[in-house]
Length: 466
Image (cartoon, rainbow, N blue to C red; front, side, top):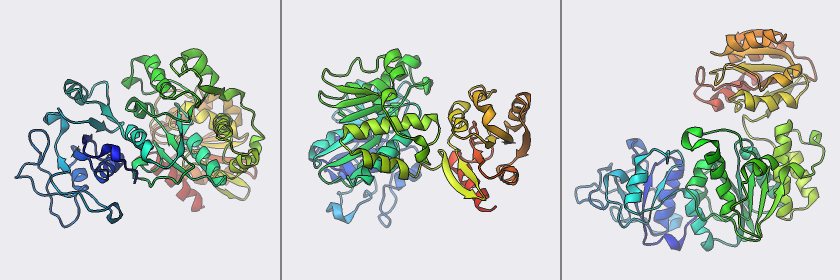
């Protein structure tokens, strides 16, 4: 795990014990810090207790230290990290809202905590204690790590693909690389890279809001479209959150931004003098037809961001091209599941609204389109420009009848399949060699599935069962 002597002897409160919260607690304890941990879910608090030590999650009093009545607990511990922390001295359990935070060095919260309305903000501010996230801890730990570089990627759409693609190209170049942040495993849970390595971090606006000293060697903004407006003061507030990634950079480092975001929202205005930058829209790339997992206009833009970044990092053009050719894609994002009898099956379950589905429809000329679920809007207007790519539609879920009506009114053939399995069978039976059967639902999944990943897996299973 990533640790730092800078944390030794300091005191932190960690609110939220999902994966990143647990990794944060463990990294701080291994660094010699004192930690007060809390999650309203008792099961998550219990996950920090070693088997065989007994259960004890009683709240600590006063400043958060364990009372004598609190049963002894020990954090999860890896033998390679040295002796385990002494129970009740380095780790205790208490709700940060219920204790005096005076003397704490920071409150570390999950990105899911809404800073615009959660009471922890006022409580910490009263005690003059900063609220940060695990990415800020990583930034503070960097001085103790072997010499390295950091690439940070943010944006409304495309940041996961761009992050994974940069990581893949670096691996292709045999440069040590770790992918983390809003994708993969929590960054603090990973072993540090060897000298010369590159940390590639996907960063949501929520994570950037909790970060103050992350000086990225290359910072990337894929695009900005309206999103998460319940957490910000309008679209301008959301754009300003993204722009903070560049404001944290230092002279001599580089930014990659799309031209529209810079023109409309001046995202580089607060960046330091001497920061180099590229407009991703102007980056020359090769023939997209050579990159099977990177089809569609949205992926062309993701490629431009990744190629610009890799050029700034000094990678050879042949290595970059090899990485583009061999990139396998991310699960549920334009994922090529199988090819059967000349028909390609594509899983784009992550497309949970029409805006996300539109570029998927643009990617292939002859599509048997499976769509539907829990609708976020009552139209498919963003998809309409690409209806000429649709051979036939197959609607599923709650939105099925509404979407069937829209497609019929547009002159398209439609089958109301109701279930995903039935839609896959019908589309596979109708598709001809050279055509594509694509799940790109333009809907949330919660009417029939637990999440988009479960829906995507159901598509894979249905295809494998043909």
